[in-house]
Structures are given as C-alpha cells and as structure tokens.
Length: 228
Image 1: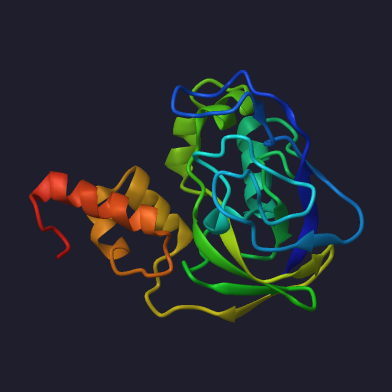
Image 2: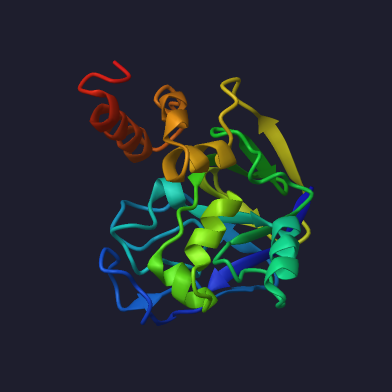
C-alpha cells in the first residue's frame, strides 16, 4: 500500500457551481507534485485552508476545515472509471490530494487511521459527496448520478500527526474501529439507502454535521425522537 501521487490544486474560474455552492474559483484541478509536501491540520472552517501546503478550497461554506483536510482516491477505482468512461483519467482528476495504490479507500472504516511515510497520521472522517463543480469539471451529463450509483466516493481524512509526505510513501493502517461502518456504507446511507442511516448515529468519528443530517432525516421519516 502506498501513495502513487500527491496532488495539489491549480486555481481556476468556476463556471459550474450549483446554487448552494459559493466562490468564483475552484481548486478541483489537482496535479501531481514532485518532492515532499507538508501536511498539517487546517485552521478554522471558512478560511479555505486544507491539509496540504499549496492547496486550498474556494467554496468555503461546503468544503475545507478539519474534517475535509485531505481527500484520497484509489488508482484502482480511477482505472475502473477509465474503462467505464472510455477516457484517460490522470492522478488528481477527481480533485483528490492522494492517489493511492493497494489501499481499499472505500472499504476503509470511518475513524480508521493511516500512517503515511515516516510520520504523518491521517484519520478517515467521511465520504466525498458529489457537487455541481464536480459535475461540470467532468463535463459529462448525469455524472453525479453515475458517481452516486457506483458508491465509490473516496475518503476525506483529518490530520492527526503533521509532517511531510511524497509520492511512493508507504501507507499502513494503524487502527480500525470495531463499528465497521465503511466510507462506502456511509455514502450509501446518506445518498441512496436511508434505511442505513441509524447505523451512522453512534459513529463518533463521523463529522457532527453528518450525524446531525442522519438524525434529522430519520426524525422526518419516522417522527420526532428517532435515534434517541
């Protein structure tokens, strides 16, 4: 298990944002970089800060902050999309900071911790939810629906221990919570299979906003007090 590439965004105008998205620019165009990249926990939400030096987000209301510090996607899943879409997908094209090989990113358990290289430790926090910018960037009609059906969202991670990473660094799983709720499972619960939502309520490692979303949706579906 290792990093195939470390990718940092190149700012560009954002003509694709949906009505709920903010910012006139986007950092979704991420490209592999050579050499070591510093990783640190970002500051408060709303600043555009993320975990990798030289990277940032522009839709500060919906992206960035500690729970979305780093985004990882597996090269194996990109290869599957290449075959399905019939086009070349370069590392970073999904806006991921880390393109991995040999890592089951979507099967990772929420709260799972990875050591990357000699010092950096990241914690899996939640799945990526597709947005209008992603749809426009991929320039494919119905892309977000197609991405959602596949339930291969990739994982956002928090920074637990800062340091430096680079392409080729090994990735090791240090700890895996016993609750067993994976990135793909959480994505399906939020996006397509509401019957799975109760499982999210007790996953303390999920961002509070995701657990609150699950609670509110269950209350609307089954009445006040769902989930205690």
